[in-house]
Image 1 (cartoon, rainbow, N blue to C red):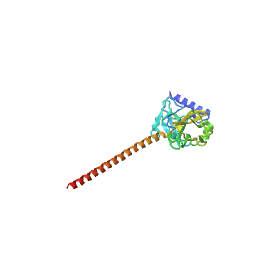
Image 2 (cartoon, helix red, strand yellow):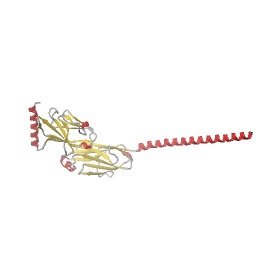
Image 3 (cartoon, rainbow, N blue to C red):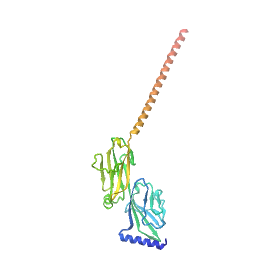
Image 4 (tube, rainbow, N blue to C red):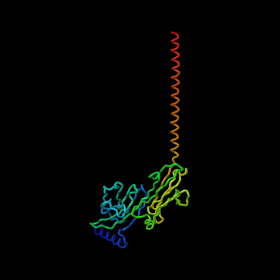
Length: 284
């Protein structure tokens, strides 16, 4: 593509942004759960990526960090090992963590001219519990557990904004996909409209072994991503520990029997030795 075509395309991009009344070509919302890989689209990509710049803001007013400069990955960023540039100029991030949330922007530079930004809001869903920071825990039946599900987004914007402007909702469902509600006496569900977080508290039962609870995030009633939490019973480990205890007890019994037997043999030998000495003295 010639330089004139590049300039024409940038002109159309700028005109489009003026007509839509926004400062960027497009705003995309991407939802992903922690630990997964994600692709962030560059909606103003040209025929190649040598003019592409990707940069990142944790929130709206924070300083921008350049991740990709003119198609080349920067190696001085914390996440550079997990980043790659797609053939369509998209930004690929592997093994997403909850700290990766924020605003990513794709920008094109052609002949010294800077085009508008194509912004991507990356929302990350993360689940944990009161007993473990991972997505799986082992806990005995009869004990209570509190599960936390949080959507990490721009911290400068309250969850109320995302709810009203983008129709974002969080809720828990069971393994059958049925939404859990406050009317179910087994679950205590609390949510915060300021921070996008919803908690689920329940008392575990024996039948909860390997049970999954799933947290869904929806945008305008469409499920965008979900994160699961699995609870495993500690009964199996209790059985193993009991077997180990029995094995140790048998060893103790055997050792005690051996000591007692040796003691008896020494006592008998001592008696015979005394008898022999007595007989020798009599003959003398």
